[in-house]
Image 1 (cartoon, rainbow, N blue to C red):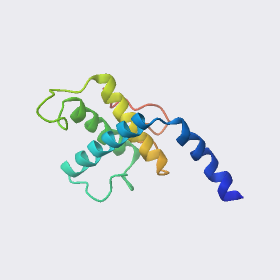
Image 2 (cartoon, helix red, strand yellow):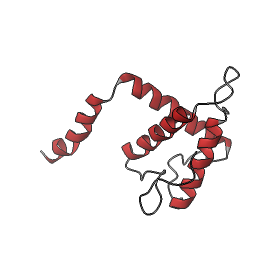
Image 3 (cartoon, one colour):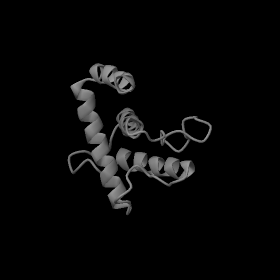
Image 4 (cartoon, rainbow, N blue to C red):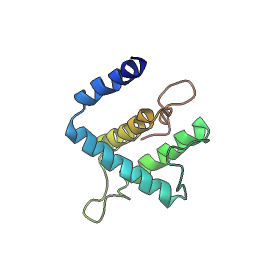
Length: 116
């Protein structure tokens, strides 16, 4: 019974998430993994062991790289600010879905100032 109770919120939330959102989340996550590899973080994409401030700075750098179009290919110059913010939120959601802290929040739980 306990396992069913623990799984119930996730199951309810899963039903509310659209296929498009999951596709966008997968796209954003693949960009995050690519970014991590590009800076030498290969086996620790959840930043386990990093200080919160380090996570904030890395996410700020990722946001700028994403916004500048580094992971978009030759067709696009840059990513719109709103799309960048949404992508960052979706990567943060993936962290939370894997029982990690939200890397966009500082020690006080406030949205980090390291973002565009």
